Image (cartoon, rainbow, N blue to C red; front, side, top):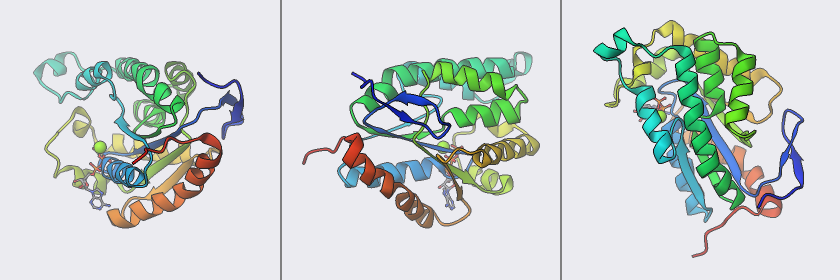
Length: 241
Ligand SMILES: Nc1ncnc2c1ncn2[C@@H]1O[C@H](COP(=O)(O)OP(=O)(O)OP(=O)(O)O)[C@@H](O)[C@H]1O
Ligand SMILES: [Mg+2]
C-alpha cells in the first residue's frame, strides 16, 4: 500500500511517496528512444535491479490493442475516416489509464525501476504542439488519466527532424506518423524543447546525434545519483541472485 508520506515533485506539488523509479524516454521519431531504453534496461538488470521495460501507447494487453488502432498506417478507409486530433487524445488517454493503473503504479509500489518509451510529454508535444490542441486541457486530461503519476526523470532525445526521419527509413514497421509532414515533426520537436525549458528539472535534453554508446554512457552518469539515493531512501527492488 502507498505510504501516506509525500515527496515534492519538480513542479512543487505533493504526491504519494513511492518506492520505485519512473524513467521516461521522449523525442521525435527515430531519435533513438527504443534503442536507448533497451540498452538502459539491460544495464540496470545487469546491476541487479528489477526493471520493467514498457512503452506508450501500450504496455498492457488492452493498451497494446489501442496502440494498433492509433498507429495503423494510413489505408483507404483512413482517408474517408482519418483519426481526428481529439480521437488521438482519447485513444492515448484510454491506453495510458490502463497502463498506469494495471502496470506502472503496482510496479512502482513494489520498488521496480520503470523504463518507459514515451509518456505524457509526448501527448503535449504531438497533440498539443503538433496538432494544435490546447495545452492546458491536455495537461489536465493527462494528469487525470495518469492518476497524477509523473516521471522521476525524463530523457528527451533531440536531433534534427531530417536526421530522425532518415534513421526511420531503415525501419520495417511503418506507422501512421511516418506519413506526417516534416513541418508537423518540426512543431513536435520544438514542442519537446519548449517543455524542457520550463522549470522542470526532471527533463534532461540529450544530444541524440551522437553515437549510441556515448549516449548510453551519459544516461548512466545522469542516473547514478538517483539510483544511489533510491537505494538509500526509496528501497528500489534489487533482484536476489
Ligand atoms: N545514436 C544513434 N546513431 C545512429 N543510429 C541510431 C542511433 N540510435 C538509434 N539508431 C538507429 O536509428 C533507428 C531509430 O532508432 P530507434 O528505433 O531507437 O528510435 P525511436 O526514437 O525509438 O524511433 P520511433 O519514434 O520511431 O519509435 C534504428 O534503426 C536505430 O538502430
Ligand atoms: Mg521506438
